Length: 109
Ligand SMILES: [Zn+2]
Ligand SMILES: [Zn+2]
Image 1: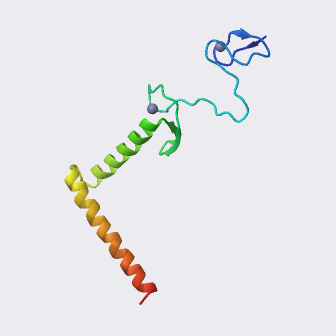
Image 2: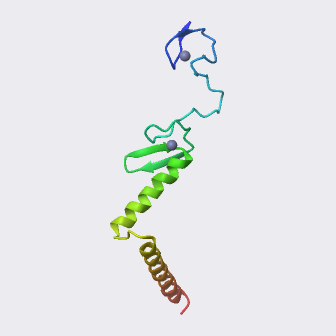
C-alpha cells in the first residue's frame, strides 16, 4: 500500500487512480494546473509572466489580466474614456508612422 498523493488514504501500490480524483499521469500528459486567479476553479491554459513571477491562467483570466494591465496603463497616462484612449492611440500611431518614415529616409535617401 502507498498513500494517495492527493488525499493520503492508503491505496494499492500499483494504483493508477483514486476515487478522490487523483490519477497517475501518463507519459507526456501535462498535470492539471489550476488557474492562478483566486477562487477560479478552471484549468489553466496559459503561462504568463507577471511582476510577481510566473502565473498560470485560464483563458478568461488571461484576458482579464491583460485587460487590467491595459486599463492600468491607460489610467497611468491619464486616459479614462474610450475617446481619450482612441485619440491617444491615433497620435501614437502617427508618431510611429513618422518614425518609420524617418527611419526609411535614412536607408533610402
Ligand atoms: Zn485519494
Ligand atoms: Zn481563471
